[in-house]
Every structure is written in C-alpha cells, then in structure tokens.
Length: 403
Length: 224
Image (cartoon, rainbow over all chains, first blue to last red; front, side, top):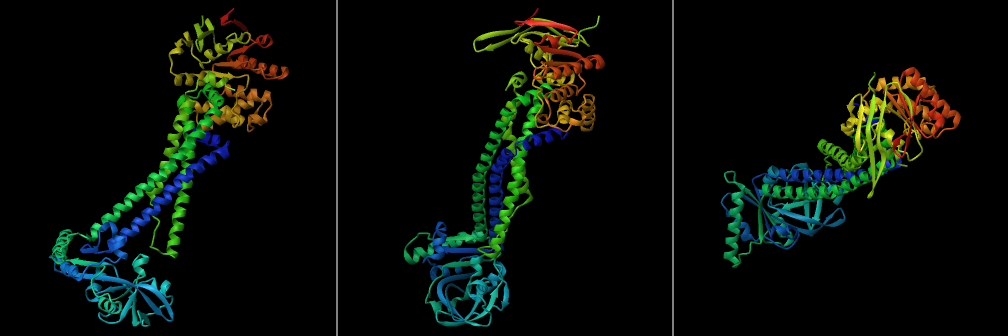
C-alpha cells in the first residue's frame, strides 16, 4: 500500500499538535486503566490459583458455618465439635483427618512481646499431608516432634514479626517455653507465612481450648472420588448432629480442593469482567474525544476537502485520510496507555515484592498488549467513521465556496 | 471537422432555496475544442461560476448533458467524476486554494497522489513543473511564505500536475495586482501556445477576457 495518505494524515495531525495530544491523552487514560487493571487482576488470579493448585486433589475441607460466612467461620467462635471430627474420620473414603485450631496468644522472644495467632496441628498425621499436598518445605532446621513443646514458624516470622529470630532458640507462648526448631519456605501468601505452628495436643494444654477445631482437613483415599466423599461427609455430619443435639441445621461447609479452586477461579473471572466493563467506559469516553476532534477537523477543513476533491480526490480517499487520522489518534493513545498500564502493573509488582501481602506477578501477556493496541486503533476508526463519512459526502462546490 | 473535446448540451442548473427554485443556468450549450483558449465572461450572478463547475465536473446539471470526448459524463458516479477531474482538468482559483500546511512542492504533488503516481515520479515531475514556472527556489516554502503571484503560480503548477487537457481558471487574477495579473495571464497564454492546452478562463474583466481567442458572454444563465 502507498504510504502517502498515511503521511498526509500525520501531517494534518501535526498541524494541530495540542488538540491531537489532548485527544490522545483521552485514549491513553482509558487504555491505561484497562491494561493495568487487567494485568494486575490476571496476576492476582494466577497467584491465587497457583496457591490453590499446590493443594492435593484428594483433600476435603470442612469448616463450621455456611460457605457465605467463611470469614466468620475463620475468625469467629464457630467450631466443629469432637463428635463432628469423629464423624468425619469414620466416613467411608476418608483416610486421614487433620483438625486444626488457632488462637491468639502473647508470644515473647528475647524480651519482645507480641500477640500472634498460634496454630495447633496434629503433627503426627498432619506433617505428611502438609508436605505432600500443601507444599510445605523446610527453609532451616527440622520438623517438630509430635507431643513436644516445639514450634515451627513461617517465612515472614523471622523477617517481620520477630526480626532476627533464630532456630534452636527459645520463645515463650502463654507463659510456657518453646523451642523454635524450624523455619518454613515461603508458601506464597503473607497469612500462611506468618504462621506459628505447634502440636495440637500441646496447643490444647496451653490454651485450654480442649475440644474441637475450627477447621478440618480430610485426606481421601485414592480409591474414592473426592466429590463423593464430600457428599458422604455432609450426610455423616448431618446424622451426627441430629442424633446428638436434635438439630439438623447444616451449619458446616464441606468442599473439595478442586471445588474451591473452581469457586475462586469463577469469582476472579467475574471481577475481571467487571473491571473490563468499567474500564471500557473510559475507552469509550476516549473514543468520543476522538469523534469530537474529528468533527471539528472536518468542519475546519471543509475548504481543503473541496480543493482535494477538485484536484481529483475520490470520496473514498477523503474517507481514508480522515479514518487514518482518527486511527492514529486511537493507536498512539493505545500505545501510550499500554506502556503506562504495564509500567504501573510492574511498579505494583515491585511494591508487593517489598511489602508482601501475597506474591503478585503483573501478568502482561502479549495478547493483552496486542489487544490494547488493536482495540484502541479500532475505537479510533469507529469514532472517526461518522466524521470521515460526513467529510467525504461534502459537495465539492459548496465546500470550495465555504469561507 | 474535429470533434469537440467537451460539450454542454442544453444544460440547466436549478438550485432550490427553500420553496423558491432558482434557475442559474437556463439551457446553455457549448462546444469546446482541443486547443481552445476561451473566456466565459459575465457579471457576478450571471451563472458563470456554476457553468465553470459543470465544465470541470465538480457539479452535475439538473437537466441536459455534458460530454467529454463523446462520453456522457452526467451519468458517471462521483468517484469516477473525481478520477477524470483529476486526470483531465486542472483548476486555477481566484483564492489560489493551496493547502496551507503543505509546501509548494507537496501542493503540486497532491493531484498526483490521487492518480496513484508513485512517490519518486511525483517528486521529479512536480520539481520539473515548478522549475518551468521559475518556482524551483520556492519549492519548500509553504503558501503563507509566498507572495500572491507566487501562490497563483504554484496553483498553476498544481493544475498541470497530471498533464491535463483542459485548464479551468476562475478569475485567476482577481486577487492580484495588475502587473502580477498580467504575468499570470501570460503564463496561461504560454501554456496554450507551447503546450497546446485547452484554456478556459472565467472572468468579469474584459481585459483578462481579451487574452483569449474566443469570448462567450453569459447573462442571467444564458449565453448571449
């Protein structure tokens, strides 16, 4: 293709630099929003799903309370009773059960005191599952011995909570002495990495929380489908509660790890659609800016259009000149927006590396970049279409006479 | 006898201004032969400009027909008209009508763009034409940096870009002083003599009309 019309269009844009740049900035903002938000949300999605996929597929999670108040269940007083745990253990297809309990306690280390969340885990059964299905790995030291006053801490604890904490040293929790035997490698999110774990038996002794657990992890036997086991656990728990307490409220939630991954994936998908829809509005506003600029340009250049027609420009040629102009406005805006958007996403990535809430990677795929560029070029062309058509439809005589 | 290069046959042009219909041209007929140098002369409002627009395929008659080399142009599509306009006709306007942000050279190259002449050839040809009009030193100036006479010469250069058969000049000296006007008319005369161009000048000025071989007077939309 002859690049002459293209050069002519660039020329026209350059004669009105301020207006062209302002129009471009309008597009930049829209594309910037879309690209930065999408690449961040894509990054969050990848990070979260990656974490969830680290879990073994044969795990089933049981929480007290409805799924809709998971947060209440995690932080509140709801508990699964020992009877519940027993019922889960007896369910056909369940190979092993790990009840987990947590409580806030004061922890002292080298004269410093802090309130931290202490986790009680039955090491005997739990360690194997954690290592195999939850991705636990030792960074330093050794695994704790069941029944002993030994604790293992997450990656963040020696960095942030008690800076300088070392293994084979002592800490006090609820007034009792404990030996720090190991530090875990990062598990990929701040909450897990701040963990301070001890054996469940010891946890019960020192906290006085003698019964139940806030959370139960069940490992299913490989000969049973996890989803079937989920159903059976539900039935068992309902039966138990009916028998023991005469209530049949299903105030517990049973989910397979796959199901959780699905749910989270869906939620993230919905969030991304919402982000996209909102940011699209910004791009449409940019497009209206282009349309406005192009209408003004047609109006200003009526005489010029007349002259071009007089010296042989076809209607289609005039349309092309104007479309290329609006396309350039859109494309340059898209380019700027993409660069800035990815820039912001990368800055956020760096920020999260320094202040980890979780480990976020800004995911600017080539597709997203290509999409940003093509979409904005496309918006430019669409916005330019009506002005270009009205320019090309001008009667040459009227246009020439226009003053 | 030679066939006319361009013919108007009983051409009517009617403009509607609201409910009032205004006949600007009332059945004019005209034969233009290759190599003619003619003037269409008349006072303002006589219909001479409309007549010129129809001769230049910028406008189509309400009634009647225009023939270019025996082909009825009135039936052509807008794009086809644009194409032959760029190929066969060169326009020179009273207001020069150069594109202000293009240089003289680029203005001359513009009609060639629309005929899809390749860039190299465009430049060579445009430079030649500018040189033939003593404008080689002005090639890279924009219209705003040129005098009226120079602008009109650039406009003439542009009209020659695609080497058309016919040059249509609408009051070409109207915005120039007498001396410069004379120079412009001299150029048109040269083009007629040396390049055998068909020249049609539209004017109200009998001194300008006198340069031509044939004068057609128009009044109230009719030739007299």
